Image 1 (cartoon, helix red, strand yellow):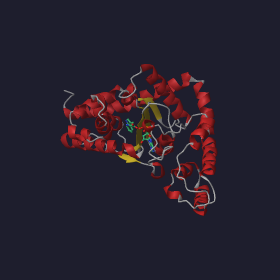
Image 2 (tube, rainbow, N blue to C red):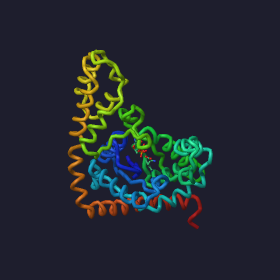
Image 3 (cartoon, helix red, strand yellow):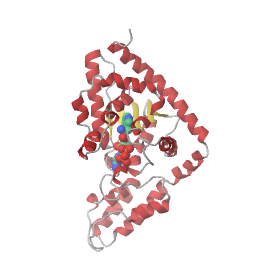
Length: 322
Ligand code: ADP
Ligand code: TRP
């Protein structure tokens, strides 16, 4: 199994990013023959226009990923733009990409629907993402539900290239964590930076508790039984605890006789404990910027080696090597 995934440095990571994507990165690094994880700064360029902010976000993302358990001895961690082969591969794929395929992709479609101006970078974003995946011969791509459409585009492009030029690319598959495919935010909608409903992984625990207390709930009175399965507060709580605690909480919901405030306090407690170790390790890493840069440098060198081989293969197949 060869695993690849990227995450954009567009702001600090939230619970949705952790349970939807990063947690799987950590689990898969131990199971995979190779795992490539990168900070997708070229993708972020379609939204982050401030150079200083992008630089800072990139370093922060690297520190966050290491703090959350990406182990440079087990996974290759790097910055997307440090592997120029991917951009070259992107062009080869671009020449085989029907416009209609991209017109259906949601990032672009949503922006157009809102009447916002979109650039060619945003429009062709799924092609760059396909290059990111195909460049490492990856077969497994851990992501949240919202990225599945992009992986489908990648599969389409790979099979059309293979059909025309022979077996060049490995066919990848999305890997989604069932329980966390769509982590709800404070308003019950999908947690996302774009919706302003996130809970930050590395926010100060006091601030996190405050945010949790503001999670929107229904106004059912204390004594009434509640259905845990449809409640987003319960869904969030479930992410942090084992089966036993989950069942206990579910039973309390069904019995009634408690307020949502109690569940919120319990959620804040388990969340604080859950990320405590990562928070400590993050502080250590922040004090070692040289180490973080070395990890990214070594990662880029490893990734380039693999990507260069795949690029060669694709170039030879389509007649670019003459
Ligand atoms: P955002 O929506 O906040 O901009 P990104 O689109 O940068 O987050 O997502 C980065 C990764 O985290 C992707 O793999 C995405 O699928 C995953 N992810 C983001 N939000 C959620 C969520 N609410 N539930 C599950 N996975 C998520
Ligand atoms: N588009 C992804 C996101 O917004 C980030 C990404 C870029 C990615 N390239 C990738 C994810 C390759 C998986 C594989 O979250």
